[in-house]
Amino acid sequence: MAPGGSVLLRDVAYERIKDAIRHGALQPGEPLSETRLSQLLGISRTPVREALQGLAQEGLVQIIPGRAITVAAPSIDDALNTIQVRSILEPAVVRLSTEAMQTGQLERLWRALLTMEEAAARGDRAA
Image (tube, rainbow, N blue to C red; front, side, top):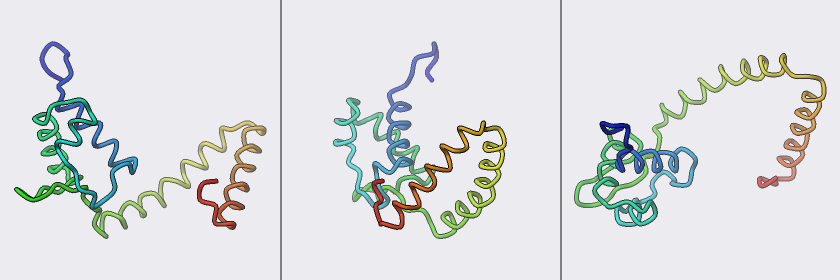
C-alpha cells in the first residue's frame, strides 16, 4: 500500500495475475502480453510490467528479455514437495473437521464423496 492507505495499481495487477495463475486461468507455458493484461485489468502497462517483474522474482512467471513472458511451470521437485505436504496435511484436516461435524453434516459429506467416486468411475470430470 502507498502512504495514506491507497492501493497501488502495481499491487492490484500483481494480485489479480497471481490469482489467475493459482486458480488455473493462466496455465504454465502460456504467453503473457503486457498489452493484453493491461486491457483486461483496465490498468496501464507500467504497473502491469512492474507486477510481472515481482511475479518473476517469485518464480511464477518467466521473462526472457526482448522475447517473451510466460507463466512458469513448476519444477518436478516443486510438484513432489507439494504432493508430500498435501499428503501430510489433508488427512489431518479431514480428521479434525469430521470430528467437529454433526451427524447430518457427516452424512451429506459421505453422499458427496460417493457421488464424486461414481462420477470418477464414469470419467465425468465435470460432475
